[in-house]
Amino acid sequence: MKLAIVHDWLTGMRGGEKALEVICERFPGAELFTLLHVRGSVSNTIERLPTHTSFIQRLPFASRHYRMYLPLFPTAIEQFNFDRFDLVVSLSHCCAKSIVHPGRAKHLCYCLTPMRYAWDQFEAYFGPQRVGRLRSALARPIMRHLARWDRETANRVDRYVAISHHVAGRIRRYYNREATVIYPPVDTSFYSPDSSDPERYALIVSALVPYKRIDLAIDACRLAGVPLKIVGGGPERAALEHAANGGVEFLGRRSDDEIRMLYRRAGVVLLPGEEDFGIVPLEAQACGRPVVAYGRGGACETVVQNVTGFLVDEPAPEAFADAIGRAIDTPFDSGEIRRHAVRFSRTRFGDEIEALVTAC
Image 1 (cartoon, rainbow, N blue to C red):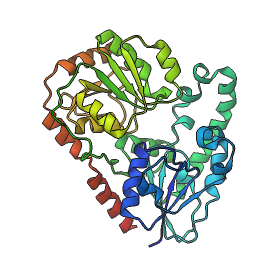
Image 2 (image 1 turned 60 degrees about the vertical axis):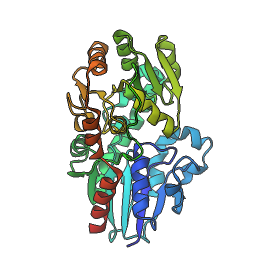
Image 3 (image 1 turned 90 degrees about the horizontal axis):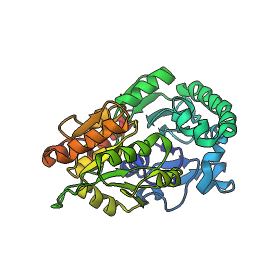
Image 4 (image 1 turned 90 degrees about the vertical axis):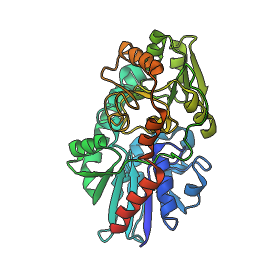
């Protein structure tokens, strides 16, 4: 079987790229297609595959500002040629699911999410309060066009696999298609407890973008009187630093070893935004630490109420502050928290996705 793997773009090792890494391990003879590849930004396992990029790769400043070329992505993704392949596996959160493939080849899409900024999160990304009235007005028709194109190309996929039941619901709503659910991989061998005693601080590990609701966590920790450490970078950092008080420490991007140490010592790990799945809560739980998360989206499938943390019904600072205080003062069973996380291991994901690909 000749296999092609398609990913939207390769610019860092986030949740989607960690799933891609496991697929590349299981199918080392595959070829990889992506709109843009920033060399050295992903693991050696991914880098070793023969990689084909689109014309986006050659556009000015694309490696850092590729999102400004979003209107060109449909054209770019449709220009790849898959005539040599028997099976295409796409990992899609933007446009990878819309590749054009020959009729004899099968197309399996591991859908991280339908294009969120074109569907239900336009305001979070392109609302007037985020980008200004003019840019928001210009973006609206572009996103409407992308949403139409996204829906019209939904049937280019033979079978959808979703990262969560939450995402499967979005696929049903926007694409009118059913999806199998295979949870993404968590490196539960690397993320593990040690003998560290928990300290009285809350931790966020996240891209600093609007829908992550880092602002809510900052306000909640201020109300709870709990110091907050924030790992990650992104376009919202300057605004968040301006709004934060002295109890917030912005750590920027950190190595996996440093993040593991922070997980192990955190009193509680926070997920204040609605996530499609959310790898961070499971990495924290693999380290034996409790999580406080907004009780919508993927967190409902990864956090066990009163056992591995608390789910908060209302996205309000007061509600999160109460849960943060309770989580830090509750004597959770760290062994039970870890046992829950181990159910989401890399081996489990690899076995499930390999069985599905082999059966195609």
